[in-house]
Length: 168
Image 1 (cartoon, rainbow, N blue to C red):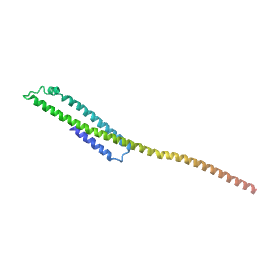
Image 2 (image 1 turned 120 degrees about the vertical axis):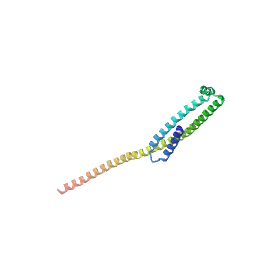
Image 3 (image 1 turned 90 degrees about the vertical axis):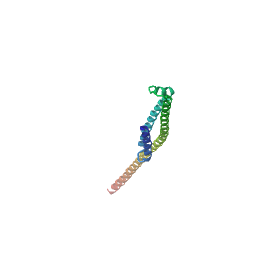
């Protein structure tokens, strides 16, 4: 019961991640990674439980589990125990299939989010690179402008100097 509730929470939380496009792609990547780790942990837990149930379903283990129970119909008790274990095992296997689908979907979402994060970082880097290129171009124009102003000042100084010489 607890596991079913946890599984529903995982599925709902992944839907929540899809609905939140306002978060940055890097935050989404982190969130999906955490969900993926959670799903993988639950998968491991369920796989362990499935192995335990398979072991308990062996006829000798069923008989051993009912050894202390006295009954006039021990075969019916063993059959009831086998049915109970089979039902539990089938439920665990169904939850494993659901978690596997969820894990596959999360891995796909993770790949998409990582791509978006890469593109976001490239978009943020592009203006910086443009500014660097622009600053290089601006520096060249400033140098040429300063040289032009220096030349203009030199010519103006020469003209003023010549006029001053003529006026003497």
